[in-house]
Image 1 (cartoon, rainbow, N blue to C red):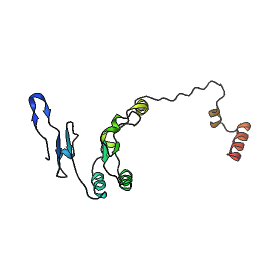
Image 2: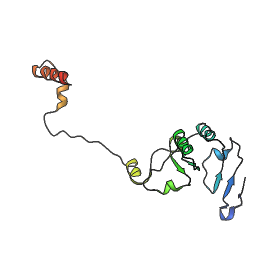
Image 3: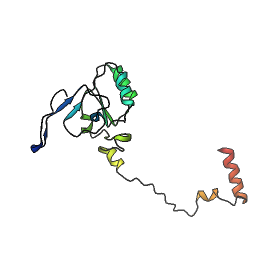
Image 4: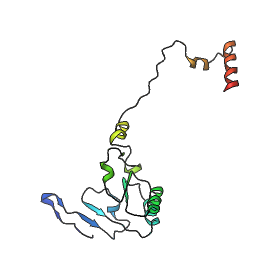
Length: 159
């Protein structure tokens, strides 16, 4: 632990806590965190976090802090997560025009704004035939009728 960790069970208080120097198989890196806890893993080369992330389930969110546009593009192109925030934290969840949701094991579907409306709506297609004549009847036998044979020949010639 780097800093924090104080707790008061009577008042349900946990001090904001930052973890550094974490073992790669630590439970804190595998479980969802519900609390003021932040595990930090630092990398010197941009390929290292890419390889690290590819070995694990896809995260709900990913964050990159960099001023190098090539590094940012490399990260975006080579990772997958529900959302990504560049040089900021958590703001992507507050934007109603951005979809919120996970990918694979971090969740399915999208919420927020029109994305949530579409995701949680049941869009149903309905086709109603009003005419007694239906084009689909031309597709079914018997094909021996002269006018059907002629129509098939025209369709095959032009399409």
